[in-house]
Image (tube, rainbow, N blue to C red):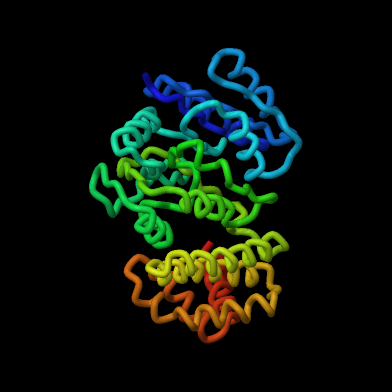
Amino acid sequence: MEKLVSVIVPCYNMEKELPRCLNSLINQTYPAIEIIVVNDGSTDDSQKVADRFASEYSNITVVNKVQGGLPQARKTGVRHATGEYIGFVDSDDWVEPDMYEKLCKALVNSNADIASGGLFFDYGNKSIPQKSCFATDTVISQEEAICHLHQRDEIFPYLCQKLYKKILFDEVIFPQRNFVGEDYSTNVQVLKNVTRIAVVTKPLYHYVQHSVSMSRNKFSENSRFAYQNYKKICDEMCRQYPICEEQIGNYMAVEYLAMIVAMARGKQYDKVIAEEILRFIRMHLKSILYAPYIEKKYKLAALACSLHYKVLGFLYHSMIDSRHNLE
């Protein structure tokens, strides 16, 4: 008898995208699925769309709540889930028909705590599969998962292309607000309680890329919160997993570089944070430059930032100006 899978779909103002997402879930080849749509205070017709699907399909439940942000919507979904396994799908994304069949089979066959599937990055009508560094049906340890997560190869920091044992969320503290790194913050908590992770190399989850997102905004109060959160996690993770210290530092460096760019985008630097990032980049520069898994653009950004954070900001604005001149 198949294990019940609870798929949680947080939704805020996604009336146009939600039908594609839900259609991809109701057409799964895995039969034992409950779909929990958490309407996070939408002001458009998202609730009407979700209610229409729920009236047509008995395995869809709609939970309405006051807007509280993505992490709290996921928390609400977990609280309502009755399955032994839990998956998350963002309402503007969609999944392959065999996603949960593949992930559930991997979990059961390997006696793992998490199954992690491959990704497509979707740009408009184009789906680009992300390459895998693993062989098919690989099972890795907790420490290996920590290292690979921070290398951003296969064990991505996202919640949505994975299937978890529900029990893993019993002690997870979901963040109270939206901020860059919220998925990562939740995943590192979950990974503390796992021993085995099954890797499914086939791309199964379509992660839709938007021209506007939190990661492309100007530096804000939420950015400051994200920075402090990253600092805290970095210290904790390096103490707990010293074998992965280099990968953890490099991961944080890339996130911090994005924050300097966000400051440059808004033409306003938080001098205290920018100076801390400058010191961090200089401390980890050699590791960043020699790491084979870090893209060239981030290595160049790190080099520029190591001179001064405003050098990176200058290069960012020069690139933007060049693009405008070509248009």
